[in-house]
Image (cartoon, rainbow, N blue to C red; front, side, top):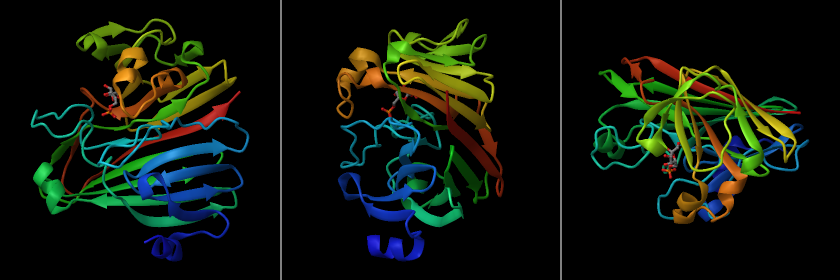
Length: 299
Ligand code: TA6
């Protein structure tokens, strides 16, 4: 499989497919701006490290595994066609069913010497239709350059309108969680999932000193993770969403997760670009919806 992938999609000196986590094929990219790793399993960006950085922008759990059809813990999991628990309460997996499926390469392009773009795709099958009775074409367009850009494109290829919630559920590496602030959501309301989705108002920049699991409403396009230990800002620019999620499992939840080290909560935070809660996408037959995020390091 790797030989075929490389024959069709490798880019000399920039992009090759190799065996990665649990022997799943991953694209390894090294261009003038950054290195990156992208797993075909889950259509999942695992790593993005500009040459200027010592620490990866994305957090990947040392215990991450996809051995038993699990979603990879870290990087950018794709939550689709629902965010969070099964909206119909049918016992289907949290965050939908595309995080643990093998996506196929569609295109690999050297945009210029420093920028590489890999597009992966996933379409409905008999198995997915048994889970969710709709036809679709999904594509994730990943651009590795001075910034990391990810665009999730949904096309309704069926004959009925379907409702969609989704997320780019991005895990970021931080130096030490208690020295991090998330800026840009001051003055916004959020649903506090730690307290029964109670609606609350965010007054100051977000600090994490216990479990945080919040769906922010009516969010701006630009958010910032301010990391004083790694002495960097991660600028997040999103398009297509009016909600965003901030999540850190903290001590108890981290200890209960088999694919996250007990102290790993200290060096990660999720700031997610989402269509979640009331931000539901209704997609008519033949229509397309794009959800995108760009990540850039600043100082
Ligand atoms: O985005 C936050 C969240 O919905 C949390 O409630 C927590 O469940 C997290 O996602 C991780 O979910 P997962 O299914 O990947 O363990």
